[in-house]
Length: 292
View 1 (cartoon, rainbow, N blue to C red):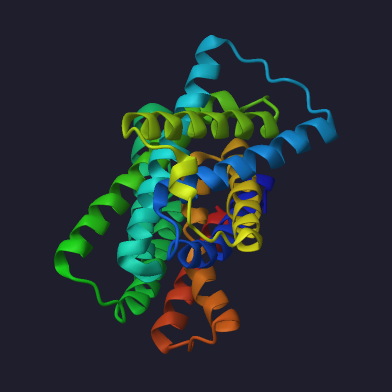
View 2: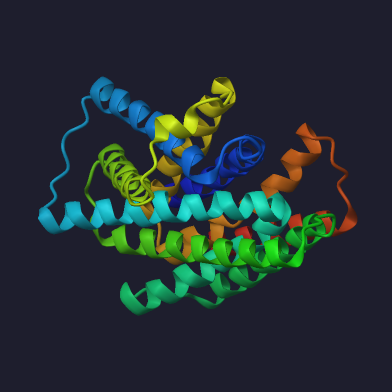
């Protein structure tokens, strides 16, 4: 297993833990406010890391800095806010189904704009992983009960979020090589905060006003920011830095299998035969990718 593949699988596991936490936080915080708070917390964590490790500055021209900020605006401001909104409307199960669109979006964009290709064994791995997460997602989504109009809005928001995540990572891929990972993630986070600031300004809303009267669960929020953004995003971007975008995207989809396993361990949800089949297909697909 290469470093990029290991980082991508680690990112999927961290994101699976974060999804469970974000679902709880989304019950009391609107998507934009939740996204702003977690990005501010992550920015503080990254600044402390850069200072503590004395990470050298990246060698980026104006175009590189602009692209990195734009990647954060699309992937951390727009995409995350839309995903949190979809998570509230659909629940973790149905939102997980939409995650299946991520690797097809990345593959198409990578083939079109990065000149990457897929080997036959990698295509087999892609099919098995997609099949596995579809089975898992269907098993989780059966219990969800939302009205059709709300579900329709949630699916549109979720699809848009996944597409923007794919665009954001393919956009920054050519600039990742040879750059300090911490600084690249920090710049993306600044781009995300810039985007959120523009949204609040356009809506003529004050974040402080939105916070008024709300009871914040800081321990849970700190945990979500650390695992779901600081750890997960570092591993996520690192995976794309050290592995082809097509492979990293497929390995990221193993988060659906991790969500099922963690739900069984932490939330005492039953491991049904359908869920076990889905997890088995996903792990088989990962094995094909690693062998390729």
